[in-house]
Amino acid sequence: MRLTETRRAFIADTTALILFFTTTGVINERFIAGMEWEQVLHARLLGAALMVPVGRPYGMWRDWLMQRSGHGRLSQLLWDTFALVSFQVPIYAAIIAISGASGWALVRGVLGATSMMLALGRPYGAFLNWIRALFGLPPGGTRPMSVNID
Image 1 (tube, one colour):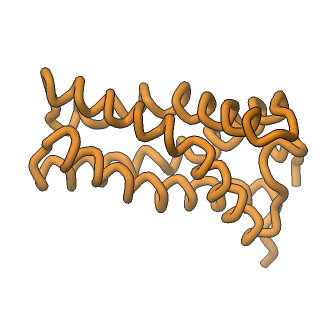
Image 2 (cartoon, one colour; image 1 turned 45 degrees about the vertical axis):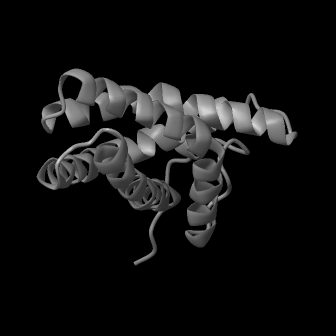
């Protein structure tokens, strides 16, 4: 059975989000926010569960914003970074709050995640495009995959 482009986009975007941000989430939660390993595990399990329904909507949000990007590296860096921070930081704040971070740990976690996402916006965008290519999909921002109905 051949997967439609819509299904491949869902799987690709979700896979990229889970792989990339499970790794960076552990680093932030344990070493920046100072959460206990049990809290980190809870946050990553909750995060993974939330990434399934969020992966594709984020990919669509990023694609929409990247259409505004120029061809230059600085423009792509700025739009990729804005896409990631504006979409993921509020979700991340909720994840670590539900997982037990409070007070200064919550503030440090959100600030740490924001800092990481500022630095990781373009690397994640490139990683997402690479995963999409593995699934035979175009990179984000070149044509809106979300309007293709297969």
